[in-house]
Image (tube, rainbow, N blue to C red; front, top):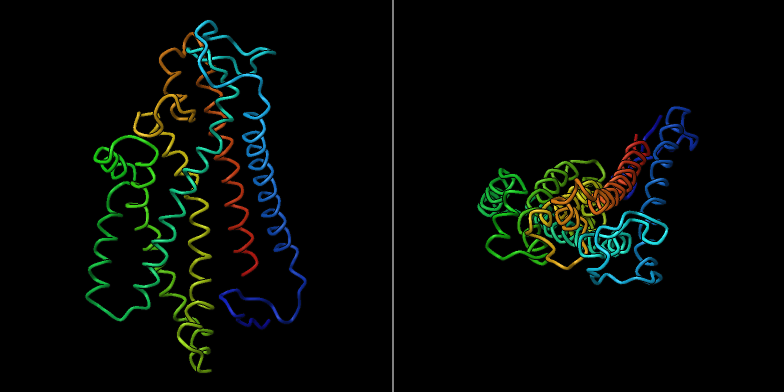
Length: 295
């Protein structure tokens, strides 16, 4: 079998396009997981869009209806302030996912650029200084650094995004630098240099796409952790502030009265699990398909 490098790091079989039964089965498994994850995520997004628009109720409090159990009127019951839990759970969908996306994309962009820059740069002093900063940030747990920064900036979702941007970029930078150093040694990079391709062409057409594909796969997995981190910070009172509908904050609000009313805690928790599982299926499906296509 002869393997030839394409314009990127993707390798493909030029002697035939029919995969082996084992490889075809792995590709199918990856596709199934990817489809399941996308269906779950799309369903959640649709509910997050339609429920706030079509619900006859509002997210405002109604003190004459506290802790009503789930029923045909209030599907998820009401919380201690008489607010419809069903409406608040889905009203928080775009807030949680949107903040998590910002908390991943900003560090992803910064870290990838810095990592590739260090790998292709020629300044040993700058490489050593920035590398030490990256190692220093990565030496501490992300949650500890985020809490420390939020304590300085003040509680709120804006502070959460800033804290994640200032800390999580180092993990992407380390991954991007390591991947870029490996890609630089590949045969197709040397071939492009031998053919006289310009450095910008080699950088943006060959190096960056291959490095970003690796960091993108990590970002999808990291998105799950960031959603949980945002919910955890809101649970501690450092994220979303009342009366904002956010899953972690809703769980925190319902925790003191859990023994008499379980629904204000369980349903936001289930929504958080649904989002995490759907993103997990998507990340695993994309990673498996990419790995099996290259193998």
